Length: 424
Image (cartoon, rainbow, N blue to C red; front, top):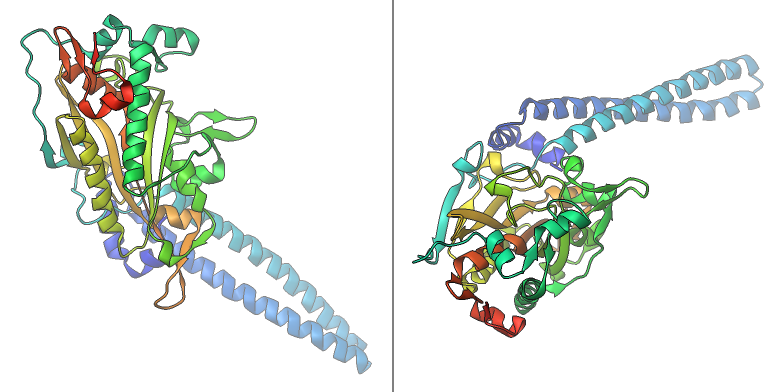
């Protein structure tokens, strides 16, 4: 959630940054400030009314002690009127605060200056890339055909058990999935991230804390009887570990990693773009999360991007890194870098990671602060997270890019985890 103080002192800058989002009304900033002015006016009037009520109440006792009963009764009536006025002001003040809260909850984070102007994925900026796209001397098969040929994944069985978008991994497919998870967790641990096993369901406060609610309420699976939400990413429970917390400045950055299944209702419909592992309702992912000092969050973002890049490079996958434009960024992000890997048989790029700096947006919602040693004041931390990595499309790319006429070669870094170097 954007801080009103920032909107007030940097109004023009805030409007310019919000305009990069393209689909949000920048006049909402003026509306928030107008409502905040009214809130302040009501608060001042309420404070004055309560003070007058208090002083008048004291006068009543003195008048009664002096035997001035009529004057005391008049003061009592005045106090009753003041209390009625106070109640009306409190109601008005609460209503204004609710209006401000609702607008702020509806406003996305403000893009950084580095974020390109643009409406959608076509306007994203390629930063760099690496690896060589595979060349095949035979007709390469897409991963869903490879999965069927070698009995690695059964999509129809998942459809029978649950529905479309819930695959069943079998045999070496399941072992490869588990190997990727363990490899990513080991690499995160080696980079200093503490492993966390969080709940895979969260309450509404956690959803609001990281910005999934109310923005993505329709995209999350909701257990209505208990009012719990299945997590769309481990970012949600892991970041909320520090909700309503004042952390020690010397402990920053706090680095955490977690494996989790992820649940998303918006899996798409039909066609090659959503076929097989391309888009699922349930998938697995290893996440890295950082709680950082505001002065170092830009540097920490670079560190996280480099960590994900090394993972992709170690798997031997052709990749590119994109800096997302304002119109394609997530609701809570101030800047995001997407990683895409090349799908050899589909001849297209597949997104496998988003690494984002949310600055103080999530921290303001979560009330996560640190005590600044320079002035002793409590200040908002910055939060960051990234997929390191999301498994389905990584698995799809490994199957497609490493296929041969005699089977599928396993990346060398995974062989100690799989126990086999080829699927045939």
